[in-house]
Length: 240
Image 1 (cartoon, rainbow, N blue to C red):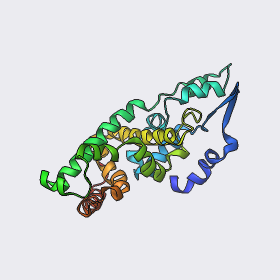
Image 2 (spheres, one colour):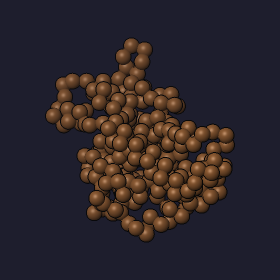
Image 3 (cartoon, helix red, strand yellow):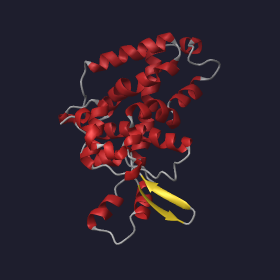
């Protein structure tokens, strides 16, 4: 069963505010995003990254990828003891901070290699419309910042519908974008962990870079981003 055909049924409860669990403590109310199952997490990643079933991210790794570190704390607050064995296991699920760290470094490397390949010389970099008076390092850092990834990539992927997180901690717009951006980083990190760097680089070129192309500004870079996305489509999923 494909994610595209089943997402409306399987993930519809995640979009209904009534499905959120909450518990009041004094003047504040903490809310935990409705939890998805490991199989739904796997299906979401396969659909988002266009992975065949043979290359699917393992269920537990997929669930970890979509779990922010705030989830464990708020899950316990919204589900007071006594706990069943299943609830304990659910609340102690690993979070995605390590995967996000790995994905962040990978994205930075793939981004730098793309710019180097597309522009070739230092003079070409200086003349590129991408910079607009800024140095290359700060410009690239802004492109891969988790808020930018959350806005341009996370929203397109709809990670906000499936990630497990603490709404109270990330209630501000900036915090919400940060968590979505970290989830994007974690997804690339999960591909890197399970399939290796070539597959993670393919995922970046195919699913991340095109969504950032408007911010590349320079026509040469935009064309290069389109070319590399088209070229990796013909390669297929590359595993280590």
